[in-house]
Length: 127
Image (tube, rainbow, N blue to C red):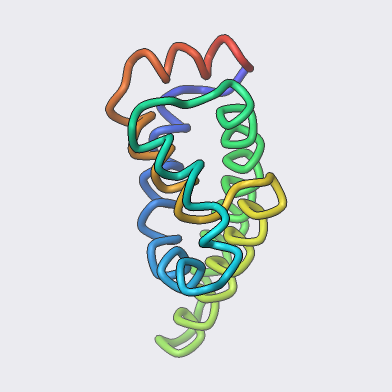
């Protein structure tokens, strides 16, 4: 069972971490094709399939976050810390994309989940 508090914490971290990646992803042609699902999510229509993709992505993103938190704490200098941060963002973005979402959709879902008790309840039921 996925702990809701951990989910919200992970979502907050990832939302901040993927923001730069989301901007880059929005500048690509495939992102234009993904605009319709993102707009649907903004309007509040979130399917169980999208929530399942989010859950899957979030599990993988959490693993990356935990792995890099340890590495980041052992970084000897600012340059190494920045390199690790970029690697972590790249891996998180890959995890999100492998789940079938783009960074923008993932971030929108994360924001909606944080502010919607209904979506939080639906996520708990899907797990």
